[in-house]
Amino acid sequence: MYFSGHLGDRMNLRIFLTVGMIGTGLFTALFGVGYWAKLHSFYYFLIVQMIAGLFQSTGWPSVVAVVGNWFGKKKRGLIMGIWNAHTSVGNITGSLIASALLSYGWGWSFVVPGLIIAFLGLVVFLLLPVCPESVGADREEDEVDSPRKNGGGVTEPLLGSDTELKEKAVGFIEAWKIPGVAPFAFCLFFAKLVAYTFLYWLPYYISHTAIEGKYLSNETAGNMSTFFDVGGVLGGILAGHISDRLDARAITAATFMYCAIPALYFYRSYGHISLAMNIALMFISGMFVNGPYALITTAVSADLGTHSSLKGNSKALATVTAIIDGTGSVGAAIGPLLTGYISAKSWSAVF
Image (cartoon, rainbow, N blue to C red; front, top):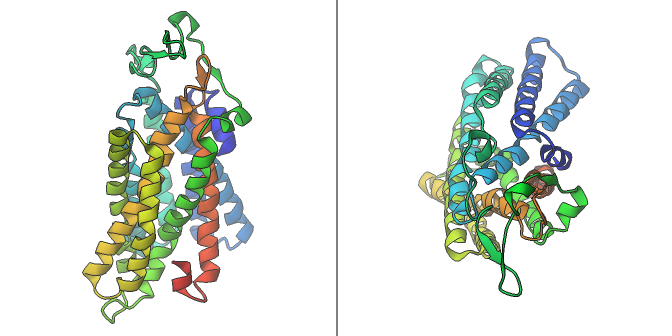
């Protein structure tokens, strides 16, 4: 993802995103083809999954950069909070599609989503406007036209005059030096660690935990786990709206993360009492866990990618987004892996 963001600031984002989506669809489908081809080679699935991951890494830096191009900072938190709901909707849809197709053979759970994303890649290529200028519209005033004050009270434009509109992409190391990038990147490391641990392990945890003295089926547990993502939708919107009102992204993200600690404790301690209690506490946990995750990967990344420390017309949206989300993805890989070892001893230790 680090490389994808660096590349995204230097390419046409529409083409870059299209190639990523079609490539993702192709290799996701190839993973499922192993079912009919009766392939049992570990290395086949490992290599196909790794290549699919490379193509997937083009997605987030590209889409955040595109949305960041269209909306100024004033209400970016709320707008991107609502827009970011697509990630939770995608998680929910993916879980439901996989559950519905599993009875026909697990291969369909990969081939069908692969075909869907490849088709939508073509839609993106035909219809996506990457910035206002591409359709003859003006950029948001607080990004280009509105002046700012320097130390002596004299105003100067944020991005210079129209005659200087040629943009230059920033380097990878230079992007790390933008104030706030490193702290938010490491903050997302832990937020994404928890979020992805729940994404991968929550259905298993639910099916192996007696709720009202009964164990749920794997299909029911998988469907029920989607309430965590439903809570995440509300959490992302709330975090974005609050950060806009307070003009305090860091305080909002930190508050949500601190609230997630007791929420997870209560879910572990009281989630087994009843089905309604489990769903309610799961929803609340999802809201506080995914709230800062959504805020940091969208509005915060877009803000830092257009930070005032960037001189001239530097392009840094995709690079900054890739740095922050790429660091978070390291946590997303470590969390579920550690959970596999820790849960064998105690689920309380996991929480």
